Image (tube, rainbow, N blue to C red; front, side):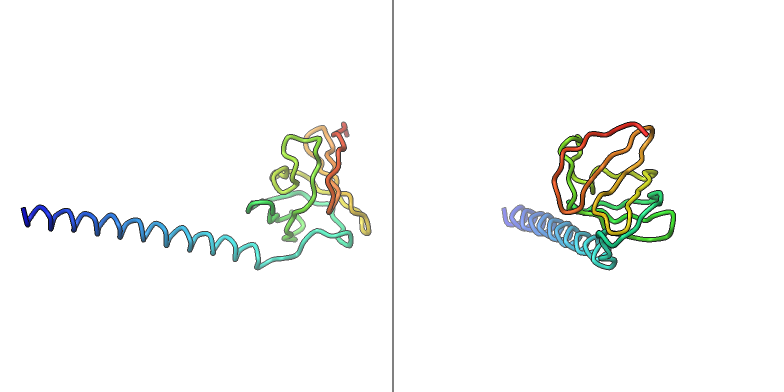
Length: 132
């Protein structure tokens, strides 16, 4: 009987240790991912001029970190278009999309395939896609 109790206690400690390691790993990974985003907090603003293709995109909740063909790395968030299935711009963008935004303007045009998609910074809008 004593041997069986020792074995169960040993198994309990192993399982508890495993759960602790998994939980620790989760929080370390989450902190690492958050630090990657906070390292480059350069957001698209009305003062940003864009005309470049997205090379890479890394998403975190309602924010996306994009690297453009021009070499710029920007964070994108807080623009919604309710006409699209993916309403948040951070979830809508794909690698290969071309972003266009004029200086002093809050409208972002996304060229994808044969269509042009529109988002407006700091706003929720309903603007349907149209052909190029």
